Image 1 (spheres, helix red, strand yellow):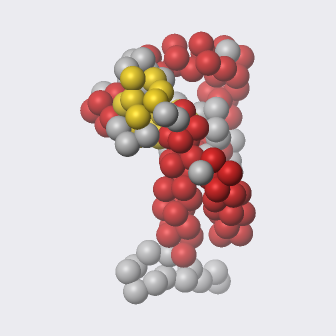
Image 2: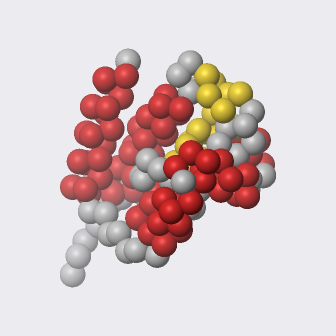
Image 3: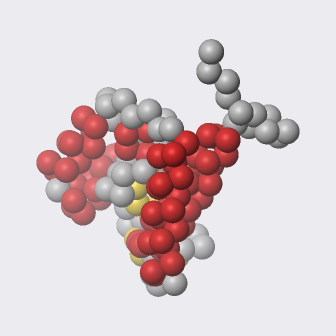
Length: 136
């Protein structure tokens, strides 16, 4: 029998690590795309680090693409939060940025299974912390 370690808050260590990685990865993507300013991948609006979200072309529920740097781009909050990601605009912007073949590969990659263990999450957290420290 496999036991999950659950903290007093009721969250497993794994879910806490996913939340931490989401936070660090989001900062990395927004810094990458909005230094000093950027454009929303979906609508082209000028955005800053502070006014952007880390938008995902393939939904975050697909772990195989959740932390894929091609799948994630700075997006204005209106498109990401209130327009269901403006997926048609996102796809157009992504094709322009990385090409149709890379976009099609992301669309296929979503079907891959990608079980992430705590150690995998720890490695990615350390990796993106290091990448962030180089951009400061």
